[in-house]
Length: 579
Image (cartoon, rainbow, N blue to C red; front, side):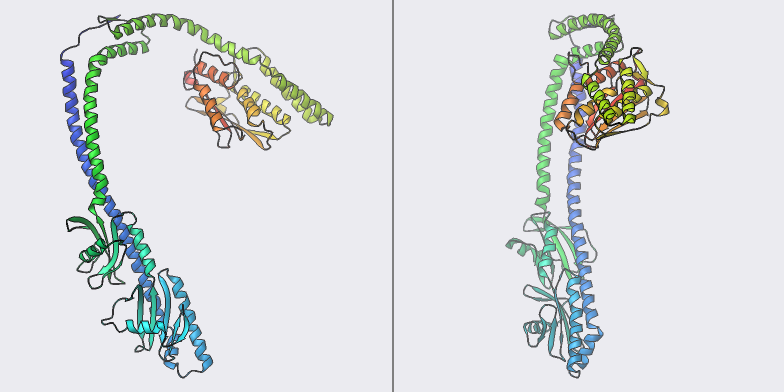
């Protein structure tokens, strides 16, 4: 088969590419501009909704808290002890009067603790000529609290709350002004709550005010907002309207939201400079257009260059490679041009010829290599391990622990019988698994039970599966050699088997604390790195054997165990098994 490549391109190909590019780009540009404006509007509305929700939440919480304080005040006025003290204050005995005063004072104390807005609570009883306060105690009149409250009560008409400089009060009277009840509200706490709302926007201001009183409390830090606030206070009471309005003051647009605080007969107003919201979005918008223009220009130039110099000859080369992927090696590419692609085409033809020969040679070597590596691993008996095992048997005999010595001897014999015998390259997974458990048992005895192991039973569906010999024991051996070489107690090795979707997974984990993240990365790198050097022992040997026999996706995969040590996962894709 011959695939001919013409040296001259058709004249209309480039024109078609340019036209198609423009046809696709114009709708994309329009769509991106529309999405940009929609996103800008959505972002701005989201910010406004967030600010409005925050202001509404605070206003409702404040309203609820103020109503609660007022109810506490009215409850106090109706208490039996206070009423009795008011009506019979001058007729009671000294002991009974003192007792009633102390009961009233005890009723005042919890009021300050029921709300973080309450600074002080007190009452004035005309019949005894005293003020009873949670802060100043029991004091004869006149005194500073009495003078202040008496001055505030002269205001007409009666306000919803009273102001005295930087102090706010709720004042109620009873029995023809025979009793005054006053509660001082923390203006500092109110200001802190207002600042929390305004924290999100540096140029925003939140304040409490009304047309009659103006701005009662504000988060403004300069004179300019103080001039704006009277202009932004609603002329009529706000009734359940949470939607923000836009108002222009001295050429600047403000987003304004009003929330009623009916307990104080005030309105909580928050205003944000529109420029603060749109400035970052506008900057992003400009950057978007500049970047889009640059990208469009680069794409045009790049498409033109690629089409002329690379796309046409490369597309033919790709077609040829795709035909090779279908195992069609009877292929030759011819080119009439004398450029770099001519060299590539000639090299491709030589590669196809050599590939045909290499496939035949490498396929024959595949099985031989598997068997050679297995024989190599079988022949590597660790003398140090054997010596230590015999020494352990010797010590068990010395201490007359015949049962343990017999068990260790039996396990050791089974281990070396399995590892040194000749025969088939594959064994039942059940036997391979049992061999690894025998090795764990030997090592646990050697380590004087400082290290233990736990395992899962093999599922019935895997007992008839054949696997390469000596693929689990090297992984377990690596754990005992490296995870617990510091002699730490309470070592644990966990072995499990799973079967899912024609894939066998054998998992070995430990809780050793010696494996660093750098060491884990080095092990993982050695597994995935392809080099000419042959690894014939340990983890690399097992990984190469599985990958060679079962194909891509099979092999050894390392990660950090949930127990703190190494997690080694042997993956065998049975569907990828080679002949």
